[in-house]
Amino acid sequence: MPRRTTVRILLMLALGLAALGAGVSTAEAAAGGVTPERAPRRNAVVMAVEQVGPAIVNISTEVRVRNPYYGLGDIWEWFRGFRPPGEKFVENALGSGVIVDPEGYVLTNDHVVAQADRIIVTLADGRQVEAQLVGSDRTSDLAVLRLDGDTRWPAVPMGRSDDLMIGETVIAIGNPFGLQNTVTVGVVSAVGRTLQSDRESGEAFSDFIQTDAAINPGNSGGALLNIRGELIGINTQIVASGQNLGFAIPIDRARKVFDELVHYGRVRPMWTGLVVEELDPRMARSLGLEEARGVLVVRRFADSPAADAGVRAGDLIIALNGKPVDSIAEYETVLVNVGAGGTVEAKLLRGDRELTVRFRVETFPEDRAPQMAWDLLGMRVMQTREGVAIDQVRPDSWLGRRARGSLRGLLILEIDGKRIEKVDEFYEAVARTIYRRGTALVLSDGRVIYRVTIPTR
Image (cartoon, rainbow, N blue to C red; front, side, top):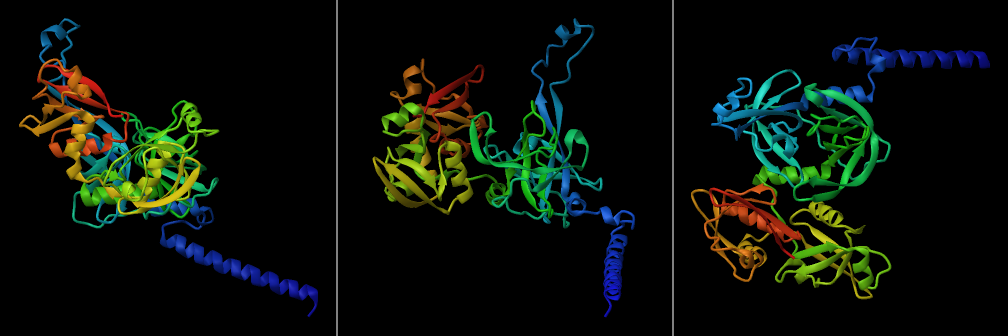
């Protein structure tokens, strides 16, 4: 066959296949409401947004706040006739959320819905639905809502965040400044970033995703997607003084928190029986190390998973599950991703020997909390009609040595920023104090509020 004829046939075949492909795309586009002119521009980003957009929601909250100036009306009248509002007023806030289950479960940030008395969710189609708080966790800055109504809701599939590639395309969808379903596109700028997730307690994690996809106030709780439209993160923070420096909670950690909140209404404290501390150069030199690495076991509780595995106070943990551990944030991040019921492999440095042990990560044994409150905080508590109150103070404790008179009956309003109303909440907060150098308490005698920080090391 002549070469010219062969080329002509191949060209006709190519054109035919192209026409066939174009015909299929046009038909699909027409079925989806996309005109033939738009079809060639309907790329992977557009298709991901079309798929996921209906499940990204606007969250509006109402918080009823007591007016501290109530009753000062006569004074306020002196100022150009201005009068303060009533005894209570309502504060509103906006944020974003992602429907992650057709049953109506919404994943968002804790700081978006914190202390909300009423939560209104606006869907992409304009419908407004009330939502109930299923549970929240300030430590991870995550919360789960459930939409009212017996229906199947559009939902975003959860992907995975452990295989992200630096430079891969990501899509952020949220409601910055109330501008509903705003889409921005960028790349994964970095993974494994360490950030504080709770500024009051200082708790941090070392697995945040950094992206240059534009994230603005109101984006909190919104979705970070991969190019397939899978949820890989929950947008949570920005560096306000920079440009395009946004951070998202990775979905692998968010999924574990979601499961805990749905099943238990809270994230149960984890328990290994270890209290660790970061090394500074001076401590490293005292241990004979050339550089600071690992975290030091400063306390090991008896009858705990780590004790049963042979871990001792003074051991240096240099890796968990094969990942180097040089900070408390890295240590905590591994444990959270393992989750209660999982097993962790720890590489230890004991003197000049390296050891490897395995132990389970368990939920905190609640029956140990009263004794820990006595040992660490030096107090026993009781439930009263007003809330949780101090029942007894250990005389040789930090609090007992500084008390002027009896502290019995003082109400415990907060521990490390967490509001305390029931004894169970107090004991759950105690379970977290063992990992801190100090515990901040807010106490009240009904007239005066006291703030104290009790050393726990």
